[in-house]
View 1: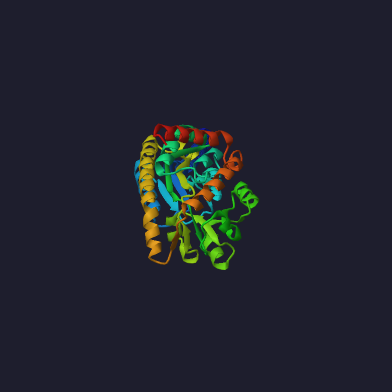
View 2: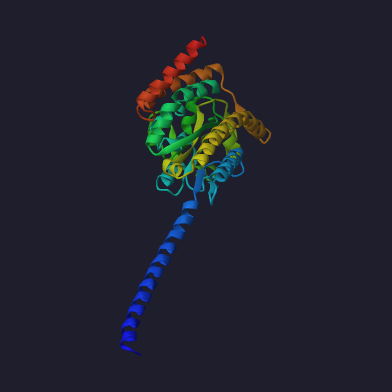
Length: 354
């Protein structure tokens, strides 16, 4: 080996080492980039709800999810958690905030955990006389409500409802005072409502939805405010077979997703979700309103007793509602939205000579 060879060999080895290092660095970059690329293609939309599995509401969400998944493409995944498997509605709101869920179908009970003004549509007893009034007020307030939800990090893609709340009890009852000897199911996330009930001589027992039936069976509670459909689906009526035929309040709800999840979707997927959410909500509303009577008819065949208040008894209920409104304003319902609902209703009824 010559002196020249001795000088060339180290240089050759050095060049090979440099190339090897560059190649290793390139492989390292690729190994990091590949998972990131795969992750970018995978978009998850996990939605929670209390609706029963295989119910019409569940089916509407599944159809909406399939349309969204096809539009999003890639490895998009859509999952619906039913039957309160992710917790009550307040818990659903919390899970969305921390990213465990990206969306939900919820009633006002959960929605008010995000935006309190929404409670004006559900927490005013005996205010709405029919669904037309509910629809009118909701549509009047809708733009401002959706803006408030967006400001809090949520996109509303559809508004729905689930029927009128009626009282299901173990023993028959017709007057407000009849219920003072009973123990009411109450949402654990609504302390203001519980405080008002106690001040009027009622006994609320805060529970989650999953606890209703066992609590009825053990005597922990005697009466459940519920829509007829939910009473049928959850078998509440088998232990509380008396229903007061009184439309206490509508159950109003919405389908919403977090803004973070929304921003990660493709424009095509956003459009499909927006359009599909609106269509699903309309179908849910129409179905829910029909199911009020269908569910009552089905339960009557299986032993439900329907108790209809007389006009005199209805006056007692209306008087109770009038006493409740000043207590609700500014506590359960923000004062400004409380006043807005009453103003919209007044104008609506005046236009119809009511």
